[in-house]
Length: 234
Image (cartoon, rainbow, N blue to C red; front, side, top):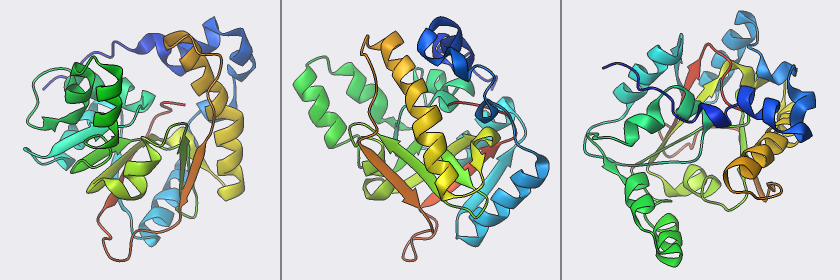
């Protein structure tokens, strides 16, 4: 199958830094660039030492195919907003026919705001598989991410049966301190720009912040990482 075209390119990093003056200073930032092959190897080894299964994809096409291969047919599936998932074409793929019980489509089909919010709380946080990205991956193998409403941190921390983290190698950082710096000084401003463009909201807030240091000792296969050898997402 050919990777679907990304129809959300108007809200990726390159687009937002051009149209939003508040983040123009980030245009040439280091966190928008791939790290070295040595640091990728270190991060992969670190993740595996913490018990996370790691799959490496060479590019967006490879990532799209490998991600499909990690998800069994028939499972219930939801996603947390991820520019990375948009860039590899997976969100557009989910907008068509798939072999999954597509929770995202079920939620978006409900137009009553109160009922949609209840679906996000119930079906949205407890699918068989939850896909999202993170704000940072450390060389030692920690995963850091956050959100404003809990609809991402909740499924990742406990609600979903299994979690697949999809991330470009520009998200690899030295340690937990730099992971927090990348989140607050890079991801939050970009998420705010996304919110201004899509929702006309003035800014985003980091209400919840989670650092996952190790795989769950009672369910070590629950979280796995698809690491893509490109700079993707925020």
